[in-house]
Image (cartoon, rainbow, N blue to C red; front, side, top):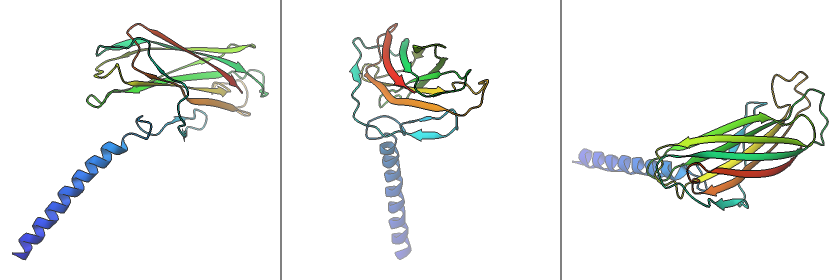
Length: 197
C-alpha cells in the first residue's frame, strides 16, 4: 500500500512541476515592457548581440488610423540626419540600418521582423533615408499590436570598405519609436532622427 501511495505522491508532484514549467515559459516569453525576447541588436562588425536596457518610451505613439484586417501592409520610412565629428579614412562610408518588428496578440503568436540598410549621402549634410515596405499576414489583434522602430548607424558602413575596418563608430537607438496599432493598409509611416557620430 505504501508503494502505491508513494507513486501517487510522485505522480502528483510531476504534474505540478509540468504545469509550473508551462506557466513560467509563458510568463518568461515577454519582458516587463510587454515585448518579446531580450531587447538589443546584433553588432554587424563583431557579430555579437548587444542587449539594451529599456527606459520609459518617450516616443510612444498611437497610429492615427489602424489596420482592422488580418493582412496589413504599408511602408515605414526613417530619415536620419547625421553629424560627423569623428575622423575616418577617405573612402569609409556611413551605413544606416533600420528595423521594424511586431508580435501579434495572444492567440496567433505571429511575429515579424523587418530590416533595411542603406549608405548615407557621401557629403555633408549626411543623410540616410531608409524605407521598409512590409506585408504582415495572419494578424488577429492588429489594432492593438505594437510596432518597434529602431536604428543603427555604423562607420565604416560596409565590410567591403576600401580602407581598414578601424577606426570604427556605431550609434544606435532602441526604440526610436513604438507605435500602438499597426498602421492602416497602404500607410507611409515616417520618422526622423538626428545622429552624431
